[in-house]
Length: 407
Image (cartoon, rainbow, N blue to C red; front, side, top):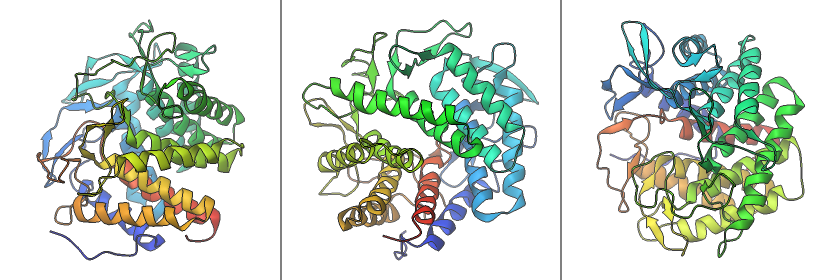
C-alpha cells in the first residue's frame, strides 16, 4: 500500500509524521507495571512482554520527550516520566552507577539477564536524561551529571581522547574499542549542553568528534577519511572484528554507510553550537563519499555496509540508514545552500515514503533486502522504537527553526 507524496520539506508534514509514527506505539507500548514494552510486530502486537533492553528503554524516553516538545500535549510528558522512572528503578545499579544491558521484567520485578556495562548504553542514558531535563524534568539534570561522571570515571581514555566500549559489572574493561559508542556519546553530550548550558559537555563532544572523524579516520588505509567501526585496545584498526557475523546489530563489520552520514549530521549540529573550520568540510566529505558508493541506483535506497575494497558487503536497506542520511542531507542543504543536497533529501524521503513507511499500520519497517522486500513481521525489536526516523524529522525541524528559512 502506498500513499501520495506530501511536501517532505514542510514543517507541518514533519510534525505530523512524528505524531503519526508515535501513534503506532501509543495504544500498546506502555506497561502499567513499569516502563514500556520493547518488541512489536508489524500490526502492533507485543510479541515479548518481559524482555527489556537498555537501548529501547532510553530511546522511549527520548521519543516521548521529543513528542512533548513538538506537541506540548501532557500525555507524552507523562509517558516520558513513566519511562524515566523505569530506567532508574529497573536498569540502574545505584551502588556502581552502572546500567544493566538486558533485563527480564516480570510481576513488577527486574531480573538482570546481562549486566555488561556498555558505553553505547551509557550514551543513551545521558541522552535520555538530557532530553527529559529539556522537556521539563528538573531532577534529570543531576541524573545526567551522575551518568556523565560514571562514563568519565570508567570509560574515558585520555591518551586516545575517546571512550572505551565495554566493561564487566565490576568495571574491568574489555579489549574492544569502537567508534559507535563515541558517536552516540557525542550526540548525547551535545543534547546535554543544549539542556544545561554546561560547557564541559560541549567540550567533550568536540573532543569525541575530532577523535573519531579526524584522528581515527586518518588510519583507514585506502579509504582515508572514512570512519571504520572496530579497534583494538590501543586504538589500532581491527579489520576482522565480526567479519563473519552479519547478525550483530550494534557491531557490524564493514564501513557503515549510515554512520558516515550520521556523523555528517552530528558535525553540522556541533558546528552550530561551537564552530570549527574542519566540521563542515568533513561533513560534506562523509556524506558525498557515502552516497556516491552507497546509493542503489537500480532499486533505490542506501546500502548498509561496504567492505574495505569498496564493494558492497551488505546490500540490505536499514531504516536508520535512510533516516540519518535524510537528516544529514537537509542540514547540508541548509548549511551550504546547494540544491543538490536538497535533491538528495527529497530522493531519500520519496524512497522511504514508498518502501519504509507502513501506511497501513504505522511506523517504519525495520529492514528490507536489496530489492526492497520485507522478510520479517518484526516492526520493532531491541533498540528500534522508531527513534532514528522520529529523531531525523525532529532534527530537520530544529535546523529549519534555527536557520529561519527553508531549503
